[in-house]
Image 1 (cartoon, rainbow, N blue to C red):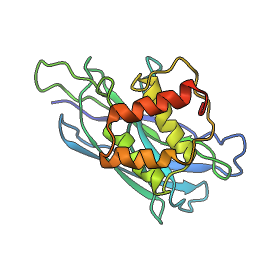
Image 2 (cartoon, rainbow, N blue to C red):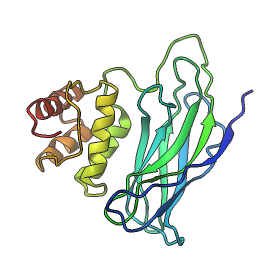
Image 3 (cartoon, rainbow, N blue to C red):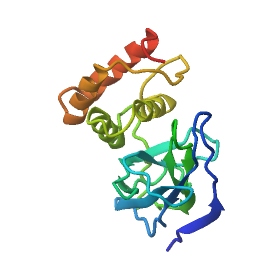
Image 4 (cartoon, helix red, strand yellow):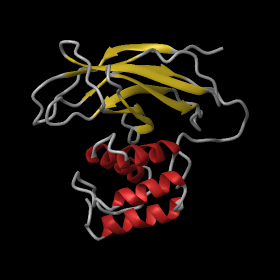
Length: 219
């Protein structure tokens, strides 16, 4: 048996440079997590006074404690009441290290960047095989979800940019250039939905984004 414990540290949200208001992001306790189980993440995004913030992108991430970039596990949006739900199929880390789950809101011109409480959870391997959180060189499911949300106008361009940056961090997309936030060509939305719908392959999408970055069309 293993225990899923709450790290009793609430990380205070820091507003972005242009934000005019604070936001508060709460992630519900994760509960027991077993390998292969479908984990449900839920929570609430509000203003500092408790007013719900609707229709904003929320990332569920694993805090890797500076050993490597944080890993995105899922992406979703808040509903009209500021509530959100996201799903992730539990995959143990190859080294058996615990996860540190938290929710992230990137903020913007109105509400500042903020993140939730952090919850620690160990997912034990069920066998001796080695596995990893993000399959090597492959586009994860959450990115295809983000691609559909961006195409449908449910997440902002900056949210999708954050998603692409995470793929670069984990070398799913290879680039020797540093990716700073900028604009994405509007036609890329077509390729994003084709990726989500399986009309183009992972490799075709990766090659396209690598071309855009290497030719400084984005970045």
